[in-house]
Amino acid sequence: MTTSPITPTIPLDAQGAFHGFLRLPHSRDDSAWGAVMVPISVIAGGDGPTALLTAGNHGDEYEGPIALQELAATLDPATVNGRIIILPMMNLPAFSAGRRCSPIDGGNMNRSFPGRPDGTVTQKIAHYIATELVPLSDIVLDYHSGGRTLDFLPFAAAHILPDKRQEAACMAAMTAFNAPYSMKMLEIDNVGMFDTEVESQGKVFVTTELGGGGTSTAASVAVARKGARNLLIHAGILNGTCETAPSVTLDMPDGRCFVFSEHAGLLEPLVDLGASVEAGQPIARLWPADRSGAAPRQLAAGLSGILTARHFPGLVGMGDCVAVVAVPVTA
Image (cartoon, rainbow, N blue to C red):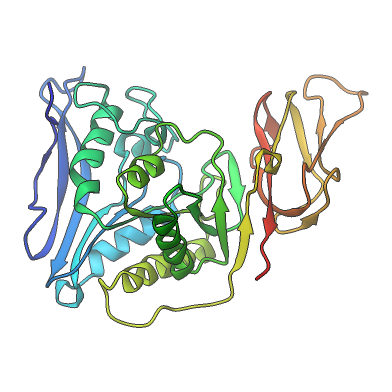
């Protein structure tokens, strides 16, 4: 099979507001001729660029789905100069289960691009997005937060790219999003990421990390909601003036940003998110989780900066990322 088995139930190229599904046939034990139905909305009016807005890439992250559900329900095509394609729960099986990865095939969608039309359910959805939706788009916003295992300062992010003109456009869009923090982001492993696929197609790409812990807050949803509208105004798709507030620019210069645990145990944070730390400063202690009377192990920052992310559950496994330290950028 070389073409996608996914069929949209709404037109992607018509004027107006349309709400439907990406229908993927999926024969399973409880539904012989069943389908995975990924929600999609398309709002189009007049001439202009196309924005692809996605969330639910990981199923335990909620700010993006909330913001995009509201946007899909309230946007008036008469106010749109171009087209907005909205996927509020792009990995629907994972979202429905409240899990990072799909319960159907174990697939992590953000490590599955460009996908396969004849692969697993996750790979098929990724393939359709990569080959049918991204090529239609001029600018792409993919919402993330920390899910059940991480907690972040709320930031929008763009990547350092080989094409400096594309990089500048991504950074400008990130700035327009106007989260409380704006990150020049370093990925641990970008193979198979949606980010990598979109950027390889030459598109403007912005992502976020807006909190975590497997839930959302009024403040984190407000950041997501404002950011989407700002981005659409920046792209010329909506009229108006971007709503702005101060944003701290952060950089992740190299692998020293990440603090990994080489042991399992009970995590005791020594500093909280947003705190300034110095290189070598203990930022957490790891107590044994299977015995008493033993001293804890200390985990230290690899460089000076701001504690930007932390492991969320109290128990840590060997190899877990315990913290991320990013460096403030001064003008």
